[in-house]
Structures are given as structure tokens and as C-alpha cells.
Length: 264
Image (cartoon, rainbow, N blue to C red; front, top):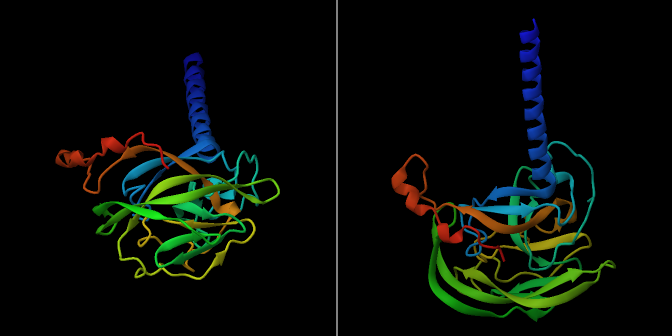
């Protein structure tokens, strides 16, 4: 009898341990950080298909979409425990406003109040051109469906943040890589209207300028602040498009040189 009770208590203790462990994992994934796999080529050359990234969720505060099953459960509105606001230039993961089951990763290029426009393939922010300089030609990468090829440019970009009064302040200039597949002025979104980003919304664009569905398209448009999950921080694992775990001869596609790279 005593032995049976011991076994019963042992099973109960083991079950509670598993429940606690699962609860801890859910909390960490919802509030602290979460892994994501890059499935498409919209951020080439900064992020490649098969990159596995870490997104820190605590930076911008917790929102409804921080939690599991948020596509079906409306936990709450707004954000809580906000430590920082998204900055212009951040690479951000957010929930698609028109499909809650999908998360996107793009570069934030427009803060509330910013004017954003494409003219002949050049990005203008608040009527100032973001100059680009070619750094390599015939760059080839897999975009999830096929291989794409284009030229890589280094874009000068003005990083900015919102103050507590909602005013935009530029901090510094950075340079980031952009892939241009088609000649300037000929891609679908190389020429757009002037977008004026509404209050509490953001404007996103992929670094694969001609191969990204982003805020330039009506399919996405502006993204409300509650849909933003967090900044992408680091590549913790990276697999080429030919990798298959059960086929050792494909293991060469493990991209060791990308593992541990910070995302900028």
C-alpha cells in the first residue's frame, strides 16, 4: 500500500514538473524571446530562406499577438510593459493584419507622421532621398520558390525614433544592403504615391526591394502598433535550401558562416 502511494505521488510530481516546464516555455516564448524560421526571400540579402532567428518580444512591450493561439483569442488590446518603441531602421517581426496566422519580417522604414515614397526605385523619406551605391553584381539566392539574381546596393538610411510626445527625431545614419533585381524604375513598386504614415502605425519594406510584398502594396499597407511583435536580433541557425536531415550528403548546405550573426 505504501509503495503504491509512493508511486502515485511520484507520477503526480512528474506530471506537475512537466506542466511547470511547459508553462515556463510558454511564458519565455510569449514574453522574452521566440525563434522564427525565414520561409521567403523578402529580406534578401539581409536574411536568407532557411535562416532561423531570435526575436526579443520584451523590447516593444507585450501585445495580444505575443501569445499562442492569438489568431483565435482576443486576449486584450494595446501594449503592456513597454520598454522601448520601434525605431526607423529596425528589422521587425509582426503579425499580418489581414491574416492573423502569418507573421512577417521586414525593415521598418516609416514612423507615424513620416512621408514615404518610391521614385524610380529610390526611397524617399520626408522628401529626402536615401542614396544607394552598388557593392556587388549578379548576387544569386533562393527566394522560397526559385532562384533570383540581382545587384546588391548599400543604402544610406536615417535611423529615427519617436519621443514621448510622438515627435520623430533622427538619431544617426546607417548603411544596409538592398537587393535590386530589375532595372531602376521598372519594378512594380519602383514608383508609388506618397504615403503618410498614420498615428500608431508603421510602414515596412523588405530589403529584397523588387521581391517583397510590403507596405507599398494594398495587400499589407500600414501596420498598426498592436500587431508588432519585436525586433529580430540574431541568426542562431541557418540551413540552405537543399538541406534534409535524413540525407547526410545534403548537410553541406548548413551555413556555418551565418550562425551567430547579428541582424542589422
